Length: 464
Image 1 (cartoon, rainbow, N blue to C red):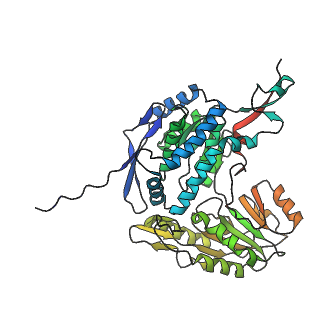
Image 2: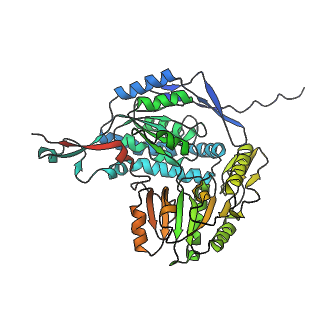
Image 3: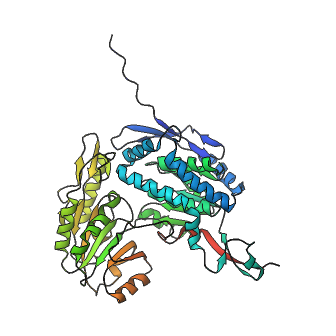
């Protein structure tokens, strides 16, 4: 008799994490890797479960500030150093890489940033505190009357991103400020928030302090409606949907840029330019998607293309991988979109295709470099989730207009009046002056303003 067929690998169970503990919902979806292989089953909780969970968060009482700070730091240690739900950190990182298509080295650096952020969450969160305010009413200064920094609410909701683990380093600041937090994970990559919420609970936050609520779309709205404030990640459509809702902070595309004026030599900064485009595999909002240069953009576009063409095509879990991987059909759709949007832009790289089939149902997204003929070219506002950059000419007459709506702008220039204009432009969130990559970020500095600016307010208190 022939041997029995090998049993399929057991799927990872990703339960909801509600106020009563782990909850395996009747409705579950399969999470597959980039080759289409099933990896996990994610529980999807119904709307009634969400309503009850959010009510439990509202009834709970937060830990004292010193306890919150210690629990956050401990959570980072658990997240990176312990086996959680039977999964070691190495197994977790490889799983995230295979499912999201983000290179393993990028996953490791992003999760290291999460650990660093949890250790510094209390300090980082309080960087937003006005210098004229105190942290609590018991401070001696309130006897003479002063501002006290207080929460705008008690329950905070997060619709998490799934393209990269990095954004999960931000929302723990809400816990540091005393909020109870509900996280709706992305179906694309639910492993990071599941692991982080579990670590936070193991570190001392109650099950009614931080919850993980995977849901269908109708129940997702209930999470935001039941919270006092919310943070939502997504594309332009998400930004448009919530732009008028003062309770919700939308986080959309970054459209980060680099500007080089004629008083500098771009050749001296080519390493920084290329690294800004390709670091993090080009998937992050802080990757450069457009470069503006005063003068002829062709030599710069050619040089960027030559550098990016050397990046290897590898499976995402390979330690040398540097490019994102997607299911083959999704990669083909991305390629079609790029070529449709490129129009009359000159392709220096990627014009003949960006899809590199890995032979297992997945494909790497190869870099693309296009040159446009004017500063206000429509294409310069297109951000795609792989190393894709539009190189455009810039003139002093064009000014700041083509540089607007930018998360990070690296300005390599000696023109101080231009620097003043860039800092005064309200739609440019961050300005890096000189040879600094657009992906630079550290705990304690604002990403898109401080989260605390959104979560907190000041009240005058005077007491006897």
